[in-house]
Image (cartoon, rainbow, N blue to C red; front, side):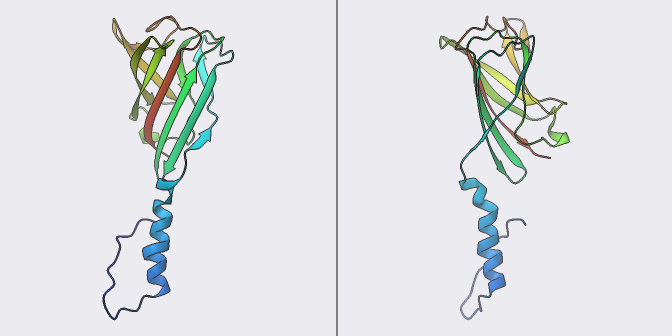
Length: 163
């Protein structure tokens, strides 16, 4: 079912059940996800050379038709940061969306400094991150763009097409 451009009733028209079902019911069902709450999702977080410890992972998403908006936050505690953080997606990305979908985020050095990051969906269908350091764009690593410690955060929002 797809959204139908609303019709115009004119004087003397017979408003049938089919008219109401198409114009009201079906269109309301189509736009209903725009008014729903975000859905909690338990993402898996993987890093190369990463000990997660008790890091807190909080992710949510909203799916509207083929569009998915995915946001999340990882707060490190009793953890050692590794390289190349990757996050599982709540809804699989369309193959064409891989390596072409981009979002943005931040990483916070214990609340003292904020860095902008870019995120995208890699060929394996997982969310990964890059940041600018003194040498240009690079992956997030144990000491890039700073030495990670407890209470450091990375957070993101990305919109992509679902499969």
